[in-house]
Amino acid sequence: MIGRLAFSKAGHDKGTVYIIIGEDAENVYVCDGELKPVERPKKKNKRHIQPIYKGCDEDLRERLKNKQPVRNEEIKRAIKVFIMQGGNRCQKQM
View 1 (cartoon, rainbow, N blue to C red):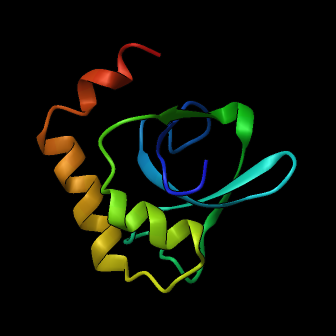
View 2: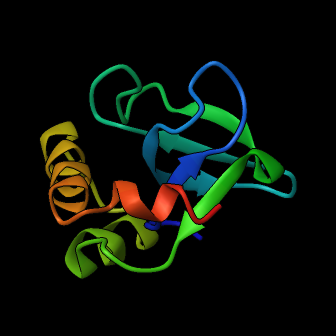
């Protein structure tokens, strides 16, 4: 799931769009480039997110998968582009 966009389904951040930058057995680590930068990702239970399987920049996705450096500005831009393309409509399908 690394490199995918995801909606938060639970918690005080419900409805927030993040990018998954890491994962382990039960949790994922997400960031949005602003409140949760790459340096301090948020730990979320996998059951509390809704992955989005379209809309993320493939170059950014590959770099995250290969553990290459990614800037917060790139993550903010990917999320902004997703929302500008009508990404909030996907949230209602959860």
